[in-house]
Amino acid sequence: MKHIFLDYDGVCHPAHHQVSERFNRAHLLDECLRPFARSVEIVVSSSWRFSYSPVELKAFLPKCLANLVVNVTGPAVVGRHARFKEIQAYVRAYGIKDYKIIDDSKFEFPEAVGEALILCNSSIGIDAAQIKQLESWLRL
Image 1 (spheres, rainbow, N blue to C red):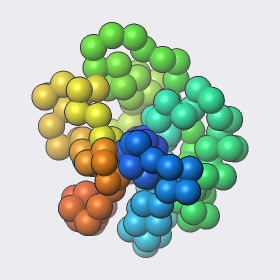
Image 2: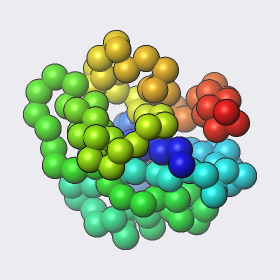
Image 3: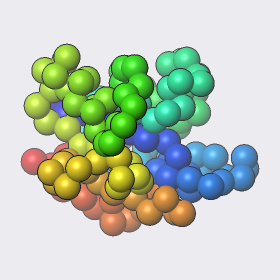
Image 4: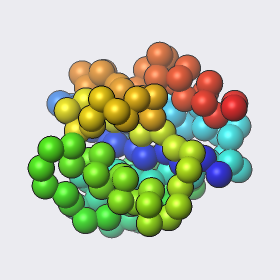
């Protein structure tokens, strides 16, 4: 099983967005993942997990995408590369071997994260270039 750690702001919509723009990029991810629905799971790594329940987090997403959400990462970590450390704790706890991180905050990750990170432009959100990276990995 492949796993995706998904951020919301800067991925599913621009980081600085109007309410009307919320999740306006999520359909791209939904369309990309639909053919791989049996072989991929999503873990929400977004800070939205501190304000919304898992059920509410799913409700923001298109149906196929929401159905792939299995969990959220754990407690907040403070300090350098906090998001990376949160994801690594989850990876260790659940024995995950094959994963990608879709995020827009490069400063949250060390250089060593390498190809595990699919970096989005925070002013746009996920776009064709990131979808292409994701599809290449999913087809392996």
